[in-house]
Length: 252
Image 1 (cartoon, rainbow, N blue to C red):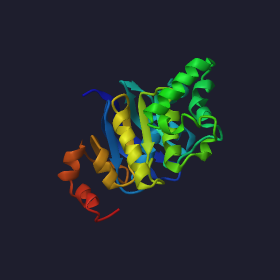
Image 2 (cartoon, helix red, strand yellow):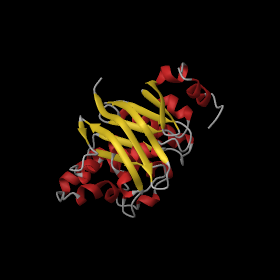
Image 3 (tube, rainbow, N blue to C red):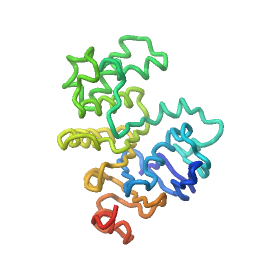
């Protein structure tokens, strides 16, 4: 397997004294779904935001170590953050469609990047919506407001929006926490298809979801990486008692 992202001695703390990540060393395999799971406050969201430098917008006191994407440290001072975010798509817990049409939501980032060809925009919108398994449901509603879609459709629209610029990485922070079981299953099935093309890092809604979709899994507790392994093996036979206790619902 090819390593797409590597974290080396990553530490991050906020100005209020909260230490969110503590000396994390972790590899993420290309074309696989890696779940990072654990109790609230364990550093999962911070880790995702660090990978596309969204933490630059937060009140971070200290960030040390390295985040390597294809062996290039994205924390280096000369990093082009705008270009980085075109390589690393992000989807959040609640659907966040723009106040635009379905089409406009998907084409927005491309138009922002300067694309003006209607043919190319049409092709990109259809490709992204197909990848998000939404095209068949909305192809006759592209001019409708994105807010007219159901919650599950809106979340897949957000995935399509992230995919429109063809990123290399897709980060998802509890993407199904606000969705019903059927919509959740749709998202999970979509991700299984997307991993053939993209590297996916996901903070799951719950442990059951983590166990269902993880090719690899990493358990975090209070900012520390406790255990990492192949998904099926880690959830069936965790090596650390803290991981086992969390999986079995003894805390968290």
